[in-house]
Length: 173
Image (cartoon, rainbow, N blue to C red; front, side, top):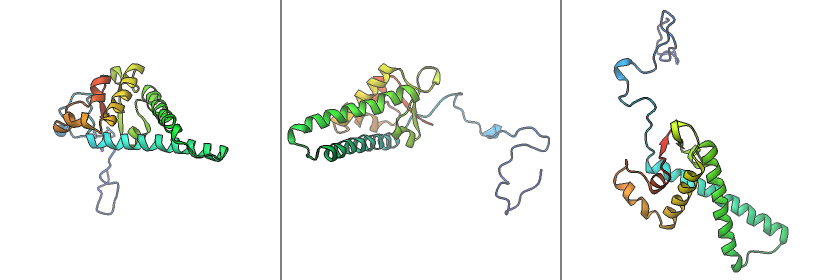
């Protein structure tokens, strides 16, 4: 193998040793103690980033729907229509969250934050009832202004209400 100097940017990126055998990515004396397949629980900051991104996506789609309705009809929103708008946003959040969790194990915001929810045996995607319970717990947390997260904030290892209700914790990828 050629010795690399300061000018070689790939000098610390060996794929094989002198005999053609693969070099392990982690030296044997520095291997982690965690069992194979173990994943770290997601911190609150990553969860809040994912929730903010998901909320922004739903609000953007809702705003586009309202603006296109205004463009088509020429009439603005009346106060009597506000409950219908809120119901539409709730419906939109359901269909932006649950199918994504069932099919991929992550929403748009979770993908941006590198989070995922794994079903049984570590496969991507949650069962439908677990995804619905996770969505409902997220709504309950938002409705209480985040007060349900006080128990999680005091101990980072404790599960959030959505983790407890769905039975599946979010993990970092």
